[in-house]
Image 1 (cartoon, rainbow, N blue to C red):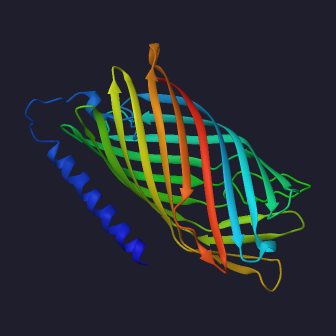
Image 2 (cartoon, rainbow, N blue to C red; image 1 turned 90 degrees about the vertical axis):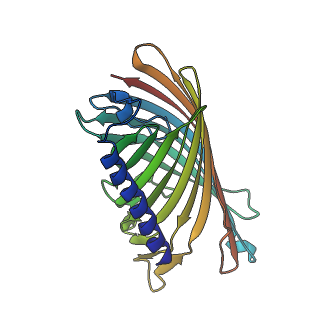
Length: 323
């Protein structure tokens, strides 16, 4: 596919730039700043701990997702709302005498979903709870004066099949499959703080789903290409930032065991997300990071006389301790 070729080319260029920077960093530099700090990220957006350093974070989050599907046939239109309350946990570790760092993430919580047929006041309610997928990131950072090059990969692991909720039983919060997301990023120190960009391509493995009454199926495809940019303002030890992310999701498909008409496709889609945040260090390595995010479909997919729109608003507060 064209999008995959473009993605591979861009990641190859950024990866080559990272290797070049690593070679350059071994040469003498005027006005050197070769300290442990040069092996850590400048920004909070692309956090990367210094060698031998650790950070533990608790991240309570609330969000509301709204999805609308409108058709020329009113009986085929509906609106779906999903409200979530989640507690996330993250652990970051910078390997001693190395440019590499490991980040682990896991969350647990509950989501309440309601589906409202178009023109109806009677919604159907569903609930999802439990742990989400395990998130693992392995990344390397190379510093050249006021520029950092980062590259690595993110791995998302699902412990089992995704269980769909019904009126009589709750669903779970796992995806039902694994994904691998290589990335390359760059961040630059500026007169006001820092700024940078990140390119990532998420390869989605097949996802298994199931429900009551022996209903089951498999989802395929829907790989995601994303390009992000951020800017941070330093004010003393505090940081104030904003990040914009544009994503393109490729075509996907599914099949289940419901009968003869048991296969379907999802069209490609484009979406955008913006987040604003502040990072406020305190005594003894503790810090607080509140963040507000908003995302939405940029392309209203029109297939089979339908128009799809979605919005997601989230609020989180990260409480972290470094040692």
